[in-house]
Every structure is written in C-alpha cells, then in structure tokens.
Amino acid sequence: MFREHGFTFYLAVTQLEHAEWLAEQGRGDDAQPLLVNARETFERLRADPWLERAARAERFDRMDQRLEV
Image 1: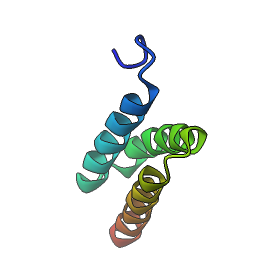
Image 2 (image 1 turned 60 degrees about the vertical axis):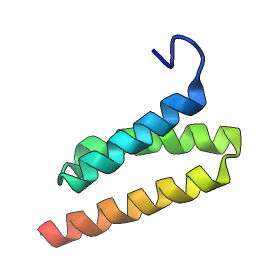
Image 3 (image 1 turned 60 degrees about the horizontal axis):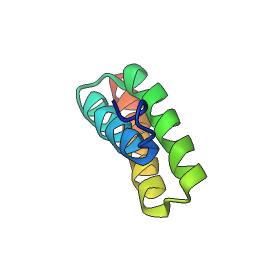
Image 4 (image 1 turned 90 degrees about the vertical axis):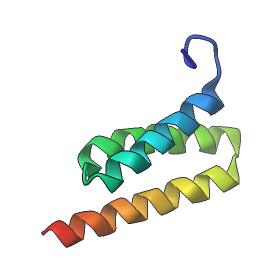
C-alpha cells in the first residue's frame, strides 16, 4: 500500500519495525533484506534519526546471530 501511493518514508519505517520484530524472534536472515531496504531509503531521505535506529537494529541482529553459534 505505501509503495503504491509513493509513501516511501512510511514504507521504510514499516520495513524497519518488521525487521526489528523479526530479529527479536531470532529470524535475522529474514530481517536483513528489510533492514537494507529501510536503510537505503533513509539514506536517500537523509533521515538521520531513522538511520541511527536502523544501525541499532543491525547491531542487535549481528549480536543475536553470534549468540546462536
């Protein structure tokens, strides 16, 4: 829906929130593409606070994956 109406910011926020949830559920592999897409959109929009949140989510995902090994 967001993509169809050109609401790229809201799409990126939704992707980030979904990725955060997936990472919390131990599904980092599923979260990774969403994090990449969200980060790329936030970079284009220069949405620095959201880039910081995406970076935190990526760090959490990497930490969680190391704990599983």
